[in-house]
Image (cartoon, rainbow, N blue to C red; front, side):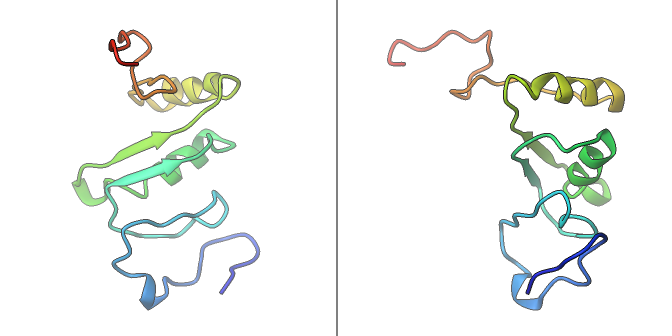
Length: 108
């Protein structure tokens, strides 16, 4: 079933409960109340409020949560601006999963 238009998805289908991974666009992630520990954002949302809303799908009710935000070099300044504006701590990783300051191992 597809949900069209603005606003929240009306309800979570029963067969989706207990699924370890949910994929939703910024538009369709609204209104979801899921017990997840991780959120993967394949690109920075259009606004800081959108970032905060989607990131807020994890770590609810005092539980820990981790948001992984993917960004191109062109999108990185927007993500950094969101971080400053929202008071978030970002950990930047290179394309190979290392911090940019971390040296490559001999086998890399």
